[in-house]
Image (tube, rainbow, N blue to C red):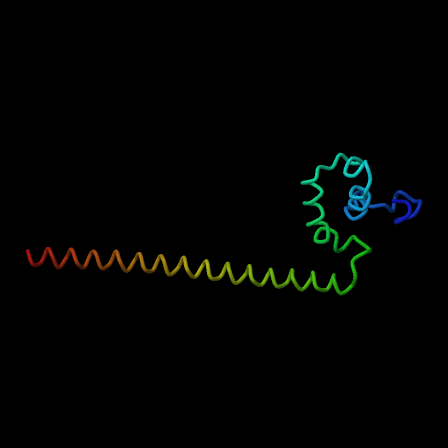
Length: 115
């Protein structure tokens, strides 16, 4: 931590997953033992660390950060589209159910008038 963030521990982040993975996944007999890190946890951390540290990690380039922001915006847009389509589907489903109910009433009225 001191090599990366300096001697003032007040400037150190509470948790740096990149540094943790660097030390925890180093080769040698103590691999994953420094932090009692299981292989599954290590794999999960490896796959998610770049997403969780975009703003805090100095190792991520500006282009990667811009790409992440663009992906976040795209995800937000897709979520909004999904929510709109979901609401539209619910309205159509309710409208269809209402039409079917009206048709049943009309059908019953016709049967009653013919009887």
